[in-house]
Image 1 (cartoon, rainbow, N blue to C red):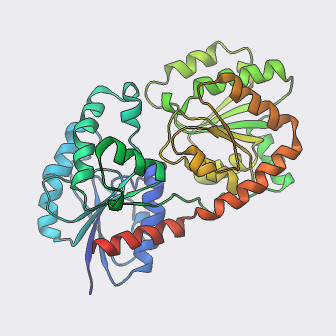
Image 2 (image 1 turned 45 degrees about the horizontal axis):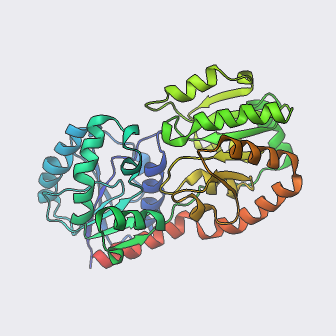
Length: 375
């Protein structure tokens, strides 16, 4: 029997797909194309790109206002969506961004990526924090089912909000086909283009306190002092809020000239930069998953990541795990990877095995299983 599935598509933004947007795009593309027997209504909060209308069984529907502020979030989820639902009459609402509608009676599957604001509230703008603290626990209790992107996030929801484990299913992220190992010649081309022909460590992510770039830069400066080399430090990501500490550290670095900011890169360019790296340095203070970890492993690039939150779960035994608060530990991991080709080979081999459990088709299949249960 044909069902109507409404989908919160507001993170499907052309040229701006990051974590939640990428999860939405890759899983929904596969689900809609593989289930032509159902009708999907994609609910956008602004004019949309046709690239996100993946198949003929998708009906796009623009629901104003554009929801990018706590007051507008409330208007969109609590007023605009219930009105739209009365017209659409969906059998299920799928919301991939951790929000849902408390005023709607439509059965809801919500994807929760993390509740980082509970761990680092000072890193979230005041009104955003107030909104999250009030609504997110209520959203979690209201949803019929919850998909989380890691077992860690599931445990976090149980411990913080008392969500029953049986209500949650872990649906891991995946990697794009653009991420793949590069040949030595291709790596050389990337180094010439982005790193002045030198080997380089790579950080990928928004420049935001939770990503811990300040400590990464401190560790890189220490690595350069202790291990004379031409190795560069590349930063691939946009500048987000509260980025002043990272840039203050940068301004005072001894080896500032060896740090290169690339800004936000398109997927094809970012995949090349990842594939050419000596190692990915991804020592966040907190992550609900950490997609760059598996993107690097897919490229057979060694990974240095944190021993906290979800990162040990995602990395398994295929990365060097360090405390994100310990600059010395991050610097030592850089030193170890730089000095030891054998260690780099070992981590690349283990990473190739670790990433077998992560893939967007696996994500879509698992998410569809939860949708079927809700239907």
